[in-house]
Image (tube, rainbow, N blue to C red; front, top):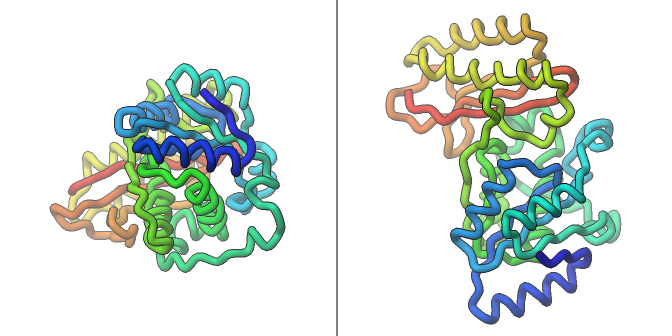
Length: 282
């Protein structure tokens, strides 16, 4: 695996590979890698000749400075994991390489309603920051395929919108959520949970499955109330629990049979913010 810290050198290297008709797959990350990230690397290797990963903890997508400071950083371990997974290139820039000046952080993206609901409602400015760094990374790597995890489903839709706004040809591939043995969605933030809370956190996934199993066209609000009460008793602080249309995340309360929907939740446990989702067809 070749590690690049400077964008110009990476751009030159990728261009040479592309000129030899090599397809490029890209997996952007913020590090603290786990099996979910590595599954994206493996998927890229199946579909691309060259796999590029990036590790950059992007400050512009954190609306909470404390969350940024606490975000886990495990670069030595991450490099070993990427090498073992067969990643070809790692881009590991510092902040100045991505944002050379304050002006580079000021672009505004017109994302529509997808920015103001669910994650966007509780993390104002988050998706603007995501778009800033993703546009920069896409311009540097210019990939044929962009591999993203379903756990950040709303972010996937935001990036789809971004690619449309930029008129890029990059194809997004959304890969399934990887889970721990107890069902907890794998996340870099899980490392901040102690063993007891890590087990308790799996209650989010069990709650989503409970709703999916018992859902009918007119009982979601009843199920939601039951689940919220139980999670509160377990010590969770739930920000949202909703059903939405997969194509645009428009929230629905009376799902129709045959609709392609997704059940989404965000909650704090011991000051660690967790998200999860489950595809459903009532």
